[in-house]
Length: 228
Image 1 (tube, helix red, strand yellow):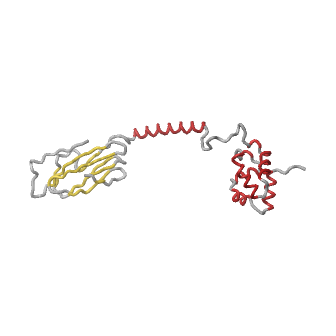
Image 2 (tube, helix red, strand yellow):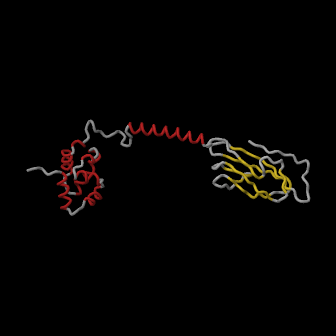
Image 3 (tube, one colour):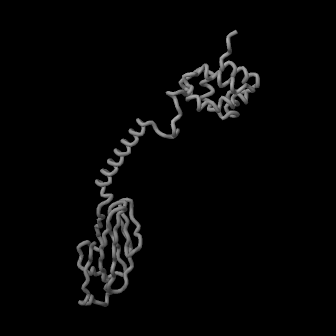
């Protein structure tokens, strides 16, 4: 009498116990792809035997079969998937094949080179800049006004940070700013500090003299702006 194949044994017992393939998968924890591969004789979809063994034992228990008989039957039908001298478990199951490691390492090196090129050409590490419209970049020092406030207007590179007298200044996405700045009577010192992530920073100091209508600028006022 011809010996029944493992697929027939599994299907007969699934039917006898009024189960479905999904029921068996849930009770054994066996990947459904493994069970379907055994039932449909799709050998290429099965891993090496050590990865299947524990599922075969659980399968036998759920279907009231003898684990050793199920395992021996599996070995007889899927012997090319049983580990041998040429199919050993890797010392580290999570280790990547050497060819994949080479591809990953090579890809990583290329990514670093490309990233470095992009950053070096984008000014990411360079010196920031500041273009002042108000007070004018090349105005006299001090810049004299007759109002109690001044609009600070200028432009920095997008992505850079701006502090005005130590306070973070609001910027548009393009890096421009327009800020109403209150003035004290007579001389006001305004420092613009522009910094770049992982880059340098610059400091520009401007002096604004608030001259009230009834006063004149003292001739002793002599200051100069500085840039770092």
